[in-house]
Image 1 (tube, rainbow, N blue to C red):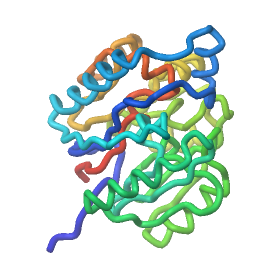
Image 2 (image 1 turned 180 degrees about the vertical axis):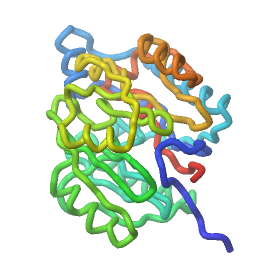
Image 3 (image 1 turned 45 degrees about the vertical axis):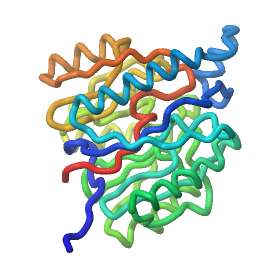
Image 4 (image 1 turned 30 degrees about the horizontal axis):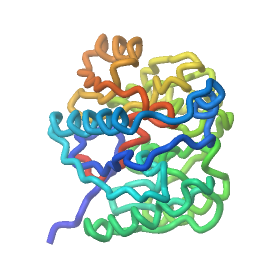
Length: 286
């Protein structure tokens, strides 16, 4: 039997994803974006609008030839729509993380059950510190960078390193100011050698690392972090799943010859996550 292969890079053709509908979603003041929304007097998003946005989002994947697997949402876990965060998918299987925020603790158990149903192996679990998937990136098939922002701690990165280094990976922590929430809110690889990046928020060593690897960086201002301008999803084959309101970034991606897919997403963004946060990749071409 051929060895299974799940996800070993950031830009190969995306074949299968795990999503969770926002059936029980409601705002929690656990990130800068949602705190701003609540401070402006907005209490809750319209459930019908949330459902329509997510359905359109899932259909955008299907139209691009990506298989969509849906989670069953849990009424006690209002943020399961941000499926990315329970862990990280590697070539060998999934590294299951550990949530820092009480509002999200317990999601990993629901996702673990789904992985078992899908016959996706677990390569390890974070048991020290905090670790969320929105901070995880492959720079290449052996090099992982992991944000230390608001939701992942250095202890979590150290625990991940202990699990992943025996599998042949190197793991480097990248610390940003906590208001940025996750690394994927300020940095996103969208195609081979191309990243959208809030460079003002990046530590110098990480920018040097990217430039040595000859990345072309599409710079966004720091305020763009809070408008999800970086939080988009590479589909491979020159396609990127973004959203209609991400106008300037979409123009720049198009100018580079990339095809942008732009569903209307506005209300889900107010919870503090965009297309990348809502997507857990299960299968990518190597």
